[in-house]
Image (cartoon, rainbow, N blue to C red; front, side, top):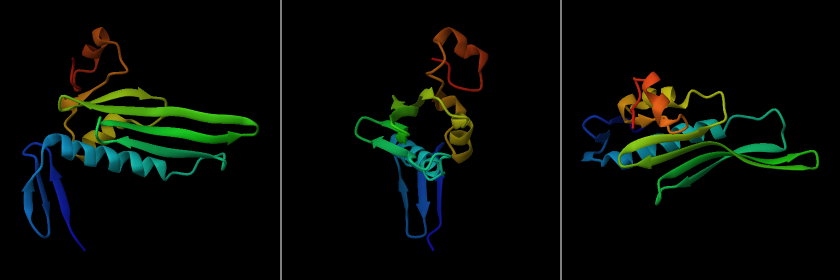
Length: 133
């Protein structure tokens, strides 16, 4: 079984075969898709509603989307949206109970590179552990 570790600070990706330098965006893409994919696999209370992922790695936009049917009502709602903008991870919307900034930090994205884009710029200073832009 291959072992793998990702270190964002020096942007090195290691596996059992070789070590290669990875651009920070490439590393962030991998980590974001892994975290969001894990949440898409979780079951919903309503079996006709699914959580699906949308990954646009060209434009660096990533979403969790609730889709399906609730009786005769069609459901199609983005519940979490993340962008990579200028080597920062921007949390643009989070309509979940997932502490997504904390989860990104746990997998190796420094909080100093995570922007809480869903919070107005003048209020971001109240979360100083995250990037304030």
